[in-house]
Length: 260
Image (cartoon, rainbow, N blue to C red):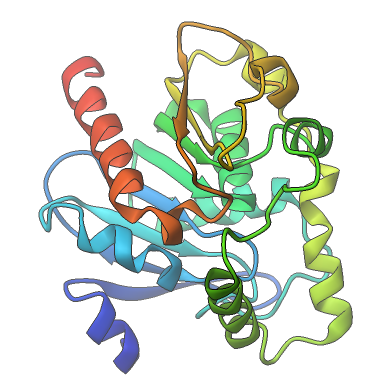
């Protein structure tokens, strides 16, 4: 059964659950035409993070909005979470949805999970979009010292804190602390240096001089496109949904024209 707020915010989507050893993983799905785009929210965000972006995408675009363990309709929070395990969870979702090939994207930790899905299951991935999904922990601090994830205004910070409080209302302080450290354990450098999958790396420049690719640990390879959003900070789906939607459309159109 679809929850009432999901009906209001995501018209045309149905909610589905996939059982896991610990509980269940939730995702929202909309059937449409063309390649399906799978989107993964960031830490302490659920499918609602993509609401503004979805409203700007064609209603005919097929979408899957995944929710990581403990977020939204997925429960409980992970006992021993990792980017690698979250990628396996996403593949359980795409298997349940019977998606043989798909575009996958995500924000922050979701972008890292999207990259990991490409690493472990490249045969299923048409393209990857990583919105501020760090290549590794050190890249975040080297590229944006002092402003890795700072909201651009007090108003945005208040909205982010309210979202985090809503999503983690049933979490323990220990679970919150544990989940918040998961992204620091992963390193996608080797994958970015070897993959042939078309890949879009998208970052906000914080209104500063844009760091070199070497600081972001993003190699200069023909299949990897680096996109900058001027003046934006970390939470791109909330800060600039129009530009995020534009990039998703760009990738979908690229796949439709270039990948059989």
